[in-house]
Amino acid sequence: PAALRPQPADVALDLYCGAGLFAGPLAAAVGPDGRVVAVEGDVAAARDARHHLGDWPWARVHRGDAGEVLARLGLAGAMLAVLDPPRTGAARPVIDALISGPGGQALRRIAYVSCDPATLARQRTLVESLAGTSYQVVGPDVADALLDFARGVHATELVLGVSRRHRWTQVLSPGVGLTAVRESGPIDVHLAR
Image (cartoon, rainbow, N blue to C red; front, side, top):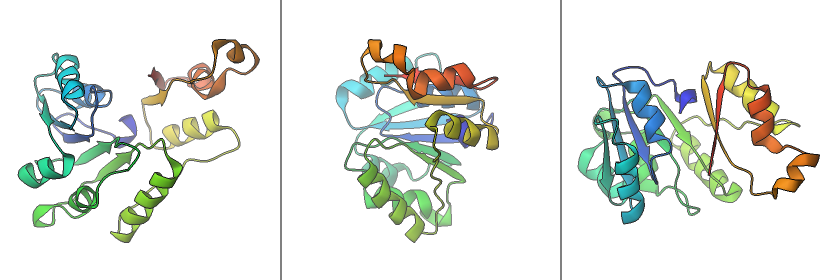
């Protein structure tokens, strides 16, 4: 969420929030004068998110379909959003609402997390067709490319997924996450499961 540059008193959306992995850092960044609107469709994950966000009463979890919740709440005054949808990707009404919100309101920044390259490619095409901007972080060394991008946008935090490789393989090659932690300097790197 740091790449989104959330500021105190901002309003942020976390769609498909799961257990609140991104909503927590967003809530800490926007502070009590701000607000985080988190949306999760899964009953158990929404319950877990409410538990994990208990220290930030200005972060509220709505259980339901992201498109339906956006249709009901609109953008809720949000300036930025993070999306971490399932493999099928975010539904077209969700992308439409984020890019050209109700009354012409649009978000300043959107971070889209995807574990499926084909889904991400479809979503990038959709975002660009709606006049949005997407960034692709590439390089021969993934950890260096991610850190270079984070430094370029003045990020203070970077959240990466934990490697699924066996621990013994990390002896031969530490992987992206551990390399990023080792080389991050002042950027806080969080490894999430």
